[in-house]
Image 1 (cartoon, rainbow, N blue to C red):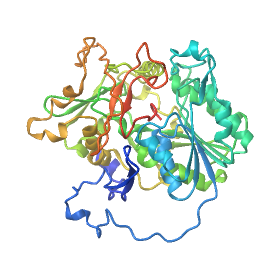
Image 2 (image 1 turned 90 degrees about the horizontal axis):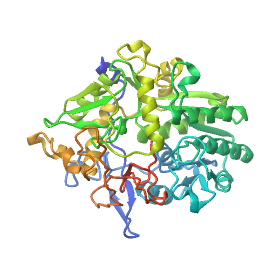
Image 3 (image 1 turned 45 degrees about the vertical axis):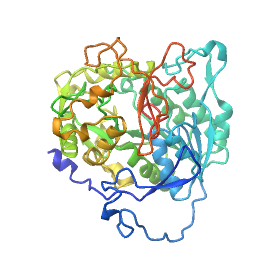
Image 4 (image 1 turned 90 degrees about the vertical axis):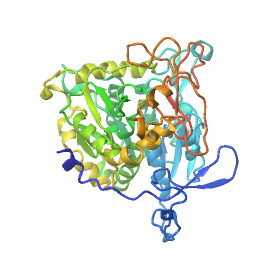
Length: 485
């Protein structure tokens, strides 16, 4: 059954080369795309091969529109910026900081104007230095950066907005909508999620999603010409690192176990955010408000797979057994407060049915929206990267970049790689015993042969600026990607 579900997603050749700017010099180096399966010495990387050679482009008119984007180093926003600027759109992009390869990519894009700064303000910096800005709801002393928002929309006609839980997300989302309306934005695409309690009073709200739902309601209320996009579970949430909810825990025999509270047989929406959000959102803008305006919602997911089916598909891609375990979320590391509350509510929501699949709420809250997947998404973009292709082509590279070596240790099963990456400080042993392993931060470990992602934690003496992310992925590729963005 899983194979049939996946058959519509063709495995495509890798994209063309990209140019990477060195962090240590001004020289540009030609860099073979990280998804290529071929070594530098392979004859398949010759100039005449379709993986590396492209004919000259035909001249074509450039779009005369400017698009406002926030949290530009997040997965959704970065994917969109790559695609939109490649065809000539100009982007005004808000970045929290300029650290990391994604932020560098955005900042050095000639079609991007960067506005650096937070969307929130600290009204009393001396008193709010230690405030956790990821807490859900209003936060004393934390305001809204209205000046930056006004500047963001200046000269823009379109906007792709994906708020996160840094600051009061609802307040920030409403302020962004107000600023967009004052600026005369012609099409406002907001990345939303459901408030399950609004669909069924017996369903608990997920705090981070409920905030987005309230922003969606406000956007409708003030009459912005808007479209709302609901994104499925990201393929690249999976990792052997001890991140909660989507940790695929490496076993001594080289297999993996994924433990989560979702019923094993209830289908969930899946999406490769980095690969597929960009072209889909661009098509929404090209179709315009005539087709997608009036507050229409889009379920952006290209596969509907149950956890059991997802493990089967992932196993085919990676070539190793992957087993699903229906169980509670295992917290092994320190995470931001806002995300901790989200996980607790998620476990309660999707645990409502226990062993009865008919009682598990739809992931998107709305059955009709969920049933539209992947049909509507495929109307926007017909070349998605499925979970199997991700597992085959990308997952091993990201795991190796994270310091794991299972893909190199085929002879002994690779079961030691996961433990080799853990840093213990006496408070946790990294074996799932219930203690949280507080992983020590690694700052900007740059490697010329790839990217390194490591972990950082919130510390009591942190100033709340660079380390307010809690558990974050550090390094060239994901240095300042936002949580769940």
